[in-house]
Image 1 (cartoon, chains in turn blue, brown):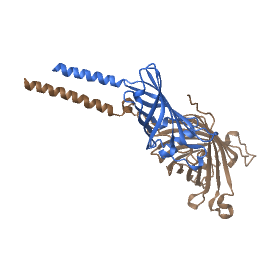
Image 2 (cartoon, chains in turn yellow, red; image 1 turned 90 degrees about the vertical axis):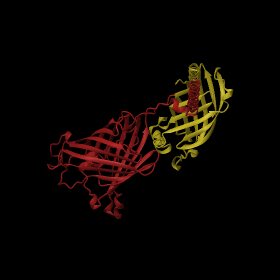
Image 3 (tube, one colour; image 1 turned 30 degrees about the vertical axis):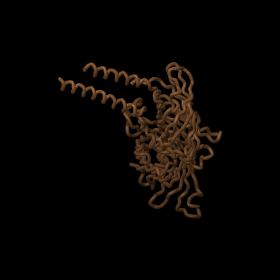
Image 4 (cartoon, helix red, strand yellow; image 1 turned 90 degrees about the horizontal axis):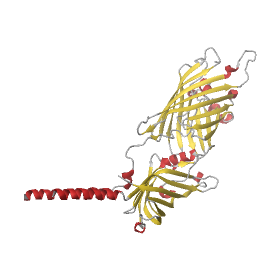
Length: 186
Length: 303
């Protein structure tokens, strides 16, 4: 009897360890966005420290990004981004929680490029909206590279553009995601 | 025996149930929570003021490295001169200045005032930066040192003046805190030294303490106060402690600081020693500071 219970413990433990290896993650994911309207003034920024986790078994995909981590070429633009637009002291973090809906079509054990249809909820500036995006999953030597390109509207997230800068700042924001994920061990 | 067996079975069931519950808990749990650091990170409190000046004084904010702040300051005549002087707007003195952000903790600036054709320059350095999280200090501590140089012709050329007589110096510690998104306050103990004091009653070394603060009214507008108390002023010359109150308007590229003040001077030497107007008598002026920030050196965004 003792043996049986021991076997169960070992079996379940092994299972949960195996389960943990189903997850891939990074803490240095790149997120780029631009919302330029006038060619005279480029409005774009990059964040190189976003967190991304992908559970390849279930296809669940999550991102978290600190708004203060976005770097602009112009310091003043960065200040205005934090102070006036995303209000990063009130809403320090943005996150995305979703899944790859066609996860079963992706063979994570074989090198190659796969189309990934991603659906989920994006929280930004305290507002949550549904987001759909077509991304790419690239499997390369045990690593998973996740790329995506999609657009959101600032007005959906309660970020107002003052009329003074409405000729420079576009309401539509193009976002490019580039994450190089590695296996996650507990 | 049968009792023991029953107990064993119960145990097994318990173990299995425990694992089932915990593993399902993990599965439902936030994926992000599993990889994120639980420890809190150090976070700096930025943007305590919209500008590197409260109104007249240095604020606890610095220019970001690679930027230049072109500042045009105007002070008009007394508002109570009335309509014939257009409430003081017919008369103006100005200071033009260029400030530069050198590193994240160091900035410097030069300027020239029409009043006494005076040049001034300063260095401002931040020793402590307010932050939250581990090993952080809840306030900012900076020091500003500056010098002023009058280039006006001596009123009495027969006297034996030397070049150092034209110089003044100030040394300032600025300690301040951003209490909340809306409220920032600071104190600045100051020593002003003049190589040549105008009369024997004027101390060469003047001690003062400045107090400044802001109340943010909206994302782009704040109410600012700026005051100096002088410990050993010349009581005979009819000067007063400088006090300014006004609003900061941020319009994207510019910060406009519109205010009322009794201080015509736009550098530390003038406003501490030559503020002859008195708020109590209504001798105040309208003034504005216009700040335009240029990015001289763009930060490189690596791909």
